[in-house]
Amino acid sequence: MPRPDRSALGGGFTDEMSRLSGEYTALVNQAELLRHRKGDAPSKEEAELWAKAADTCDQIISHSRGLRDLRVQWESRKQDCLENVKKIADLLAPPPPKEPKAPPAAKPAAVSRISTNTDGGAGTASGADPDFSTRNANEDVSAEMIRSWYQDPPDKGLDELVGVRELKERLMEEIGNVDWQVLNNVLGISPVQSYFLYGPPGTGKTELIKAFAGTLMPKGFKFLKLKGGDIHNKYVGSSEKIVDAAFKEAIDAATENPGCILFMDEVEGVCVNRAKSNIQGHESKLTNAFLEARNTLRDCKKRVIFFGATNFPQDVDPAMLDSVSMIRLPLPDEETRAEYFQKIAFPTLTLEPGLTYEDLAAETDNFSFRELEALVKGVKVQLRSVLIKDEGNWVMNEKGEKDQSATDKKLAELVENGGVTLTMELFRKEIKVQNLPMDKSEIRAQLLAFEQGSR
Ligand SMILES: Nc1ncnc2c1ncn2[C@@H]1O[C@H](COP(=O)(O)OP(=O)(O)OP(=O)(O)O)[C@@H](O)[C@H]1O
Ligand SMILES: [Mg+2]
Image (cartoon, rainbow, N blue to C red; front, side):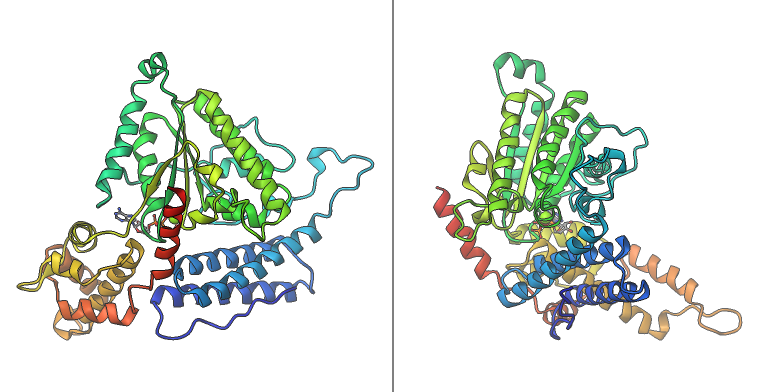
């Protein structure tokens, strides 16, 4: 078994990176301990731990774009984890003998059933639907897996996002079009629409699609989400069938309902650029299968809205870009950041005299939404510790002892009523502690090269 290197990240990095690194180490330890406890026998539970560790690596990788060395290090750890998943899956489910043919019900658990991904994976576990049925399950793609692609209604709609005004308008127009299906039909306007979202990590690609779905699901639309990177890595052998089943499922869902949104995140994992010099045979087969399946949408005449998203558009096969609307997600500009601080981050805090949201925005040039979130979280943690450390804020009980629960409520009320002040000093200190923003020169150069090439 390859043993992933478990040394933690170097010091001085963001809190979030340290947390993820700790999570990864804990998962690796648990997996190894489990193996040891089971007398060196592999188990499904152990595979689940390796799969989770791979997901954690993924999160770290998405935070470390622009930091090439770090990314390479975590990509190699992720590969080691995935290799362990595959090895265990092979040990637990050896290929069935050719003669006699095993009936489908007796088939041992396949690799594909081991997924424990909690963020999309080949699918995110959605609200269990006991009546779920599908025509698209087969030996390689279980009904359980297909059900996991169905997402619960997201809690936000497009209205609740800050910035991205033009994109929201464009998608709102799409939503408006949904109400004119008969007219569209007569005019011969295809109900199928495909979008390709790209941009640096943390700029809101996933959030935008979720909010779009959140606005359409009340109209009866279904929302299916899959993660290309996982299909590619975790389900080698079944990946073409998974991709095929996903498009079929989307068409079926759009037939039985007003429409369906199909979201393929990390689309570079299933539609690999065939011009890449080191492309593997199975990658180009998967790409062909993906493009073929996607083309079935054109003729289906059902309301399927397809989204592909990636941070690496140059790694996606150019054929994917035929007949899709390209949407680039930019880093939030100064106006958007000010709106973010006011409406989302600090709606109940009072700014110190003379300080404005625009001043905070001016300090955060080049931040992604994800980095803004990390910063805001750090600022709030600092504020909390200032409040707790202040002896004058404590409520005492009858015995003259500190009453933690009463103090908790009192301080919460204080925050809600605007009684807590944010200072520029504290804000700047947190930016320094977190060493933000990360360097984005590499990803910017890649995106520019892609845009110049695709013009
Ligand atoms: N327009 C927005 N308004 C408010 N918050 C946002 C907005 N866009 C994104 N966010 C927040 O920023 C975080 C990162 O967004 P998201 O995960 O959608 O980025 P992404 O571009 O998909 O990143 P990645 O490339 O790593 O997948 C999320 O927690 C999301 O809630
Ligand atoms: Mg995303």
